[in-house]
Amino acid sequence: MQLSTARLAPREYEEADWRAVLGYQSDARYLRYYAWSTRDERAVREFIGRFIAQQRDEPRRAYQFAITLPEEASRLIGSCGVRVNDMDQREGNIGYELDPAYWGHGYATEAARAILAFGFEGLGLHRIWADCVAENTSSVRVLDKLGMRREAQFREREYFKGRWWDSLVYAILDHEWQCRGGDVQSARPSF
Image 1 (cartoon, rainbow, N blue to C red):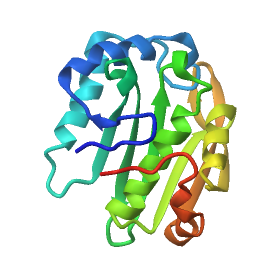
Image 2 (tube, helix red, strand yellow; image 1 turned 120 degrees about the horizontal axis):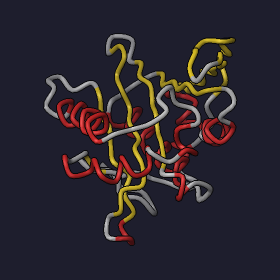
Image 3 (cartoon, rainbow, N blue to C red; image 1 turned 180 degrees about the horizontal axis):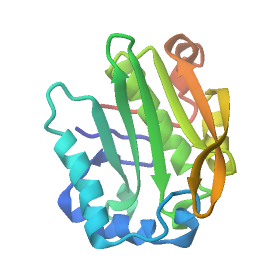
Image 4 (cartoon, rainbow, N blue to C red; image 1 turned 30 degrees about the vertical axis):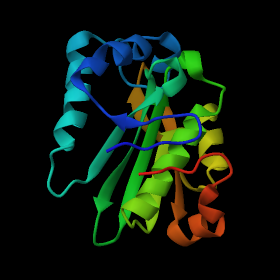
C-alpha cells in the first residue's frame, strides 16, 4: 500500500529503512520529546520490524508509512501512521515524526493530512485522535492546522528525562473533516 500527496510519497516500511530512521532518531532535536535518550541499530530494527509485521495482520489495524521525498530519490524523512483502536466505535489515532533536517517545510502537516484522509475515507473511521507532549509546540501547530480540536491536557502524565511532562489530546470527527472539504488545501492523498 502506498499513499501520495503533492510533495510526499508515503509508503510501507522495508527492512532497509532502518539506517535512515536511525539517522534522524539519533538527532538530539528529535530525541527531546521522547523517553529514550539514545537510539541504536537493534532498537531501530525492532521499531521497523513491528511496522513490517503489522502489514501482515488480518484484520489489519495499524498502518505505519515511511515518509519519502520522490524528488530526492525517495529519501526517507520520517514516519506517519494511523491505528484503529476500536473498529466497533470506528475510532483510531494518528502519529507522525520527521527528520529534524526537514522541519519547517510543512511536511508533517501534509503527511498527517494524508493519514487523516486515509483514516476517514479509506478505513471509515468516525473519530481520530492524537496526543503530544504539551511543550512540543511544533506538533501542537500541526494538530491545529489539521483542524483537530484540543480535548484534554493531562498534567504531569509522563515521567522521563528526570522530569514530569504534560500531554495534550486532540481529536477530529468524520463530519468535521468533511465540513473542511477533506482538508484539501495542501494534500489530497491517493490510495
